[in-house]
Image (cartoon, rainbow, N blue to C red; front, side, top):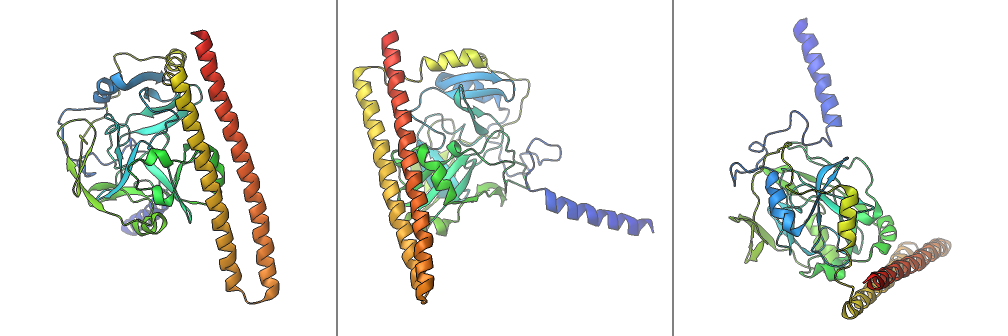
Length: 381
């Protein structure tokens, strides 16, 4: 009798567990240790405090009460966002980000990125290595990705299949499909003003898990990427690099530094600022590259490029919706149904054009604020 009761209890436990363990924070009890999760011991004895010393020359460490110690990069391009200055490659670990920054081996493969209204983008360290910690979106012509926020955890054995909340629109990075595999990807990233519209026309996909003892980001299926990007997909093998630095891409291989790290909650950076101190530091460096006459010209060139990108993308969108309309009309033989299709797409076209006008208005407002910030900074000098 006791045996039967135990079996019934076990059955309900298994059913309940299978239905709920979709998203589980990595740090919870029961998480597999690194050696069981497929991580090799590249550098015995290292813990997350290694990031504190290594990344200090490239940015600021800030103590945020809600997150602990986070890092803010200070040597980035104008308008920079995480996972933009580099390139995507397909490896035996799925979609892998190859950063063009010397320090990129760390913040794009460990931890999570968050946004602070005062400080901008910040990175919260963690000990688990992954090819990229992003979620994905795809449409007929667009490919997009967004860094996972600090609230999203990872547990070996379960992975990440869904997010605890919707990401804000400015987390997303979108490109037209043909540019997805471009080595100069940052030049084709669409302005954030396009995001709200594109999100409505794309589907989200999150798939990060452990397969064959490897953390893999499958994201969008490789065949789908091939179709949208209209490019063949080359597979690369990941090889271990002896020390930190920019990843090296060679024939069929990528050398990258991915040490096994342990957590260390007692460690802290040698120098760390609070939010207000960091705000002052950042305000003095954020516009450092655009505060001379020559650099004002550079800002104008960047802004003009953004407008070109947004207008080109909008035009492609209009062409695409007309194509969809014509495809729908071909499917129906009844004249009245074709009229109905024409009417439906006419309404969609009207809403789309309204969105496009709003996008242009928003980007003009942003550009004006940027120009005013440069003028104020020059007056202070």
